[in-house]
Image (tube, rainbow, N blue to C red; front, side, top):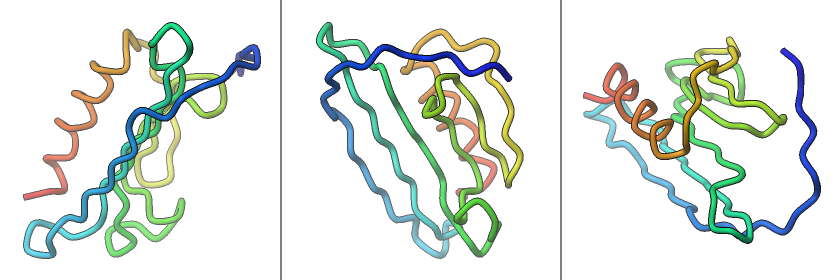
Length: 105
């Protein structure tokens, strides 16, 4: 996985959401963050379902998507894989929410 460098820019955090998941629905925490650049485009994002009772590795991250290392990638129970078909943040968020259904009842 080749890492792409990004020029330094000022980003503004526009999403900073934490959603505790009730124990009867699976427990854990959903964390979603996004930062926009000066043009209003999401330049950085992170979304994660954290539940150390389901997976203790990777700081409890069971499922997640982010572009923190210069490329779009998916975390799934300790395995990291590149997202080849990234189109935009909104579609990635939709994908994340669909995949959460595997864990949240």
